Length: 319
Ligand code: NAP
Ligand code: F7E
Image (cartoon, rainbow, N blue to C red; front, side, top):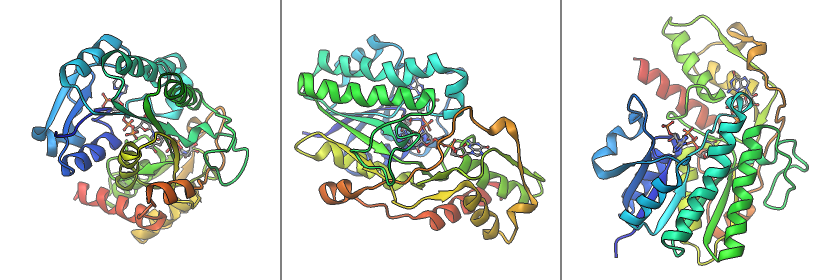
């Protein structure tokens, strides 16, 4: 029997990489798209003819019940979310509705339609927030620092709760930041590499950023979607930290990105209060030992290569 996967958030960064991976594995891929006034196909345009795209929304449980009933997937990957931390401070209730309660709606839809469906939840290192230990592993206590982090923590625990209460094959990937050329332009890494390309091309003179001292464990999205898939191939559902195990500051990211094109970031980067957050996550770095030993997964793309590949992609895009 051919494997059939349903991906929420297929138009997002991770959704597009995961769809590519599953198509290569021979899956039939169904993707959930919400109704928007303009199409958001940019990241999946190159594979669109191989996908089945269906309308629905994490805010609307009936739409998910209908899609699951019609297509009967064997695996569901819940990647949809209001995923931008800064916006979660401005739209905290919406973030809770989508990023937290959206998970329960989808889990309930699975229970109603077919409890044998395997489920992946996109949990986040933002749940560690004000990190209680370093590095962070599956056993590190959570301390979220934004409405987004709080919403993700709810999604994480409801996934565990439904696994324990109803025996669902539900796994949660606690993924640290992962980036790439398809990253949204508002996130720090892509904002930097896009600005580098614009400056090189004479389209910008400066780059305005917030906190340059924040440290993150940045990996490549293409590597991370493999871990999602591996989690659903295990006999037993579980939770895994997915990370490179390296940490670097936003300042270091700027330094490497500008140096890659022969420039000094200090000549272009301006700090701007509007990009600081009401509460910051200062330092994240993951311990991915469990993923390495149980899934056989490890990050292939490390920090310097990631920065360079993102700068090169933005330069090529603007050429
Ligand atoms: P992304 O690029 O922001 O994509 C988010 C996706 O969710 C988009 O397809 C978006 O659709 C969709 N979406 C938003 N609200 C929705 C709703 N109400 N109903 C249905 N779909 C909705 O995010 P990403 O970077 O790919 O991340 C994927 C998932 O992993 C997210 O849950 C994110 O929170 C989580 N995560 C990401 C990282 C990371 O570093 N990238 C790390 C840990 C966890 P539109 O195209 O219509 O906006
Ligand atoms: O910020 C600092 C900012 O928005 C990274 C999401 O995918 O990863 C992502 O969340 C750091 C923060 O990502 C600017 O204060 C400085 O400390 O790129 P970001 P994030 O908040 O880490 C996690 C794992 C997720 O789950 C999320 O969905 O960079 N920073 N100056 C800035 N950040 C932005 N966006 N813009 C600036 O100008």
